[in-house]
Each structure stands twice: as structure tokens, then as C-alpha cells.
Image: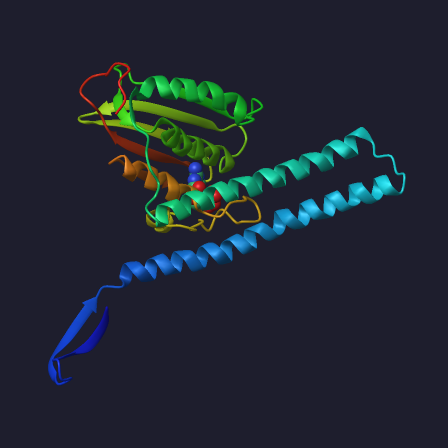
Length: 272
Ligand code: ADP
């Protein structure tokens, strides 16, 4: 709590009263802490990809200047690394933009009436190729038998589900199964995303959706990331009056459960 005290004076400057204002600054502090952390983490996370990209481009440029001929394999490997690191930077940039929008309350939704089952069917079709499973992980969708009418911003919801799928792969050894199940539960539509990965230590489960949190078994050396993704997923679900929870057993796997309000019936092409 922060307290400010001021004197109230009359026309002639005599003190006629005292005004005290007590303000709860917990939220302001939290916002400031987030901003500080955002800066420190960003500066740190930028360093590695920039160093790598700079180093590799120097090698390539110097080589060309000195008349070196790189083999196809050498060139490909170096360019692939540059591409991977550039993707990493782009992703960090996008996450930071969203986090800032959340902080300033300007994350706006463009909601439409949609069927969740159709959205997931299309999403899984695309992600099967996009996520580079190379046949090493399998992705299975068990869709609800009844339609799941929801009023959502499709691209934001896809962003959340895609992030959870990426995590499921990232934190699972090869050969893992990633399962997506959708169902109706009373007034709610649910999406459960399960993996057979490294899991999360029980005592850390409650901190999973805190910005910048990274579990102790996901050492940054092994798995890149800054710990903003789940925070963004939670914010997206909350903006839809929904929620996200996690259950997990370390070494066995994790399940993320997304809950959204379900509408009574499917709407036509209408937009709101
Ligand atoms: P990051 O970019 O670090 O992956 P997230 O916000 O997506 O950020 O996740 C925060 C942390 O939660 C991760 O660092 C990891 O420790 C843990 N985590 C997220 N998803 C999983 C998962 N499917 N299995 C195990 N741990 C996970």
C-alpha cells in the first residue's frame, strides 16, 4: 500500500483539513516487475541468436572474399542455422509484441461463431506438416461427436493451440504421441492436449502460467524459449471467458485442458 498525505487550505492559506489517499500499488508493482523482467530476458535472449548469425555470416562472407568454395553441404548447414536463429528472433519479437499488448490492455479479439471441431480438424491437418514431425512423433485428433459451437477469435485460439502443440513436441522425446481431444462438458467446450513427454515437477505446476516461468527440468540449454508462451495462451483463453489448466506427472507426460463457453447451437455465417 502507498499512502499520500496533503493539506487542504482555505483562500488565505490556512490549513483546514488533511487529505490522505491510500492506494493499492500491488498491481503497479507487478506491472513494473514484468516490464523489468521483459527487458532483462529480452536482452539476454537476443544475444545468442545474434552472435550465431553474425558469426556465420562473417565466415561465409570472408570465405567468398578469399575465393573459398564452400561445399553444398557446408553452405546448407550454415544457412539452415541462420534461418533457425532468425526464426527464433522473429518468434521472440511476436511474443513480446503480444505481451506488451496484454500489458496495455490492447489485445483485441475479432470473434465469430465457429465450430471448434472443424477448426481443430483443419489445424491438425496443417500442423502435421508444419511441425516437422518427420514421422518421429504422432499427432492424433479425437474430435467430439457433437458439434462444438463457440464464439471465438479463430486466429488467437489457433495461436494458443499451436503453441501447446509445439511445446508438446519440444518437451517429448522422439516416438511420443500427442493427442488432442475435444468434447462438450455441460455449458463448456473443452480441448485437451496431452503428450508423453518429460512432464512437470509437481511443486512447479502452479507457476506454469506465470510470465517467464520455466520448469527446472527444462534447462534453457536444452530447450530454447523464454517462458512467455503459456502466459499468452492463458491470456487468450481468459479473453474468451475461458480458462487453461494443466495436469502432469514428471517423466510421464502432461495434459493441458482448454475450456471455452459453448453456445447452444451452431450459427450460420453471421459475424458479430
Ligand atoms: P517456453 O518458451 O519456455 O517453452 P512456455 O510458456 O511455453 O515457454 O512454457 C513455460 C515452461 O513450461 C517451459 O519452459 C517448460 O518448463 C514447461 N512446459 C510447457 N509445456 C510443457 C510440456 N508439454 N511438457 C513439459 N513441460 C512443459
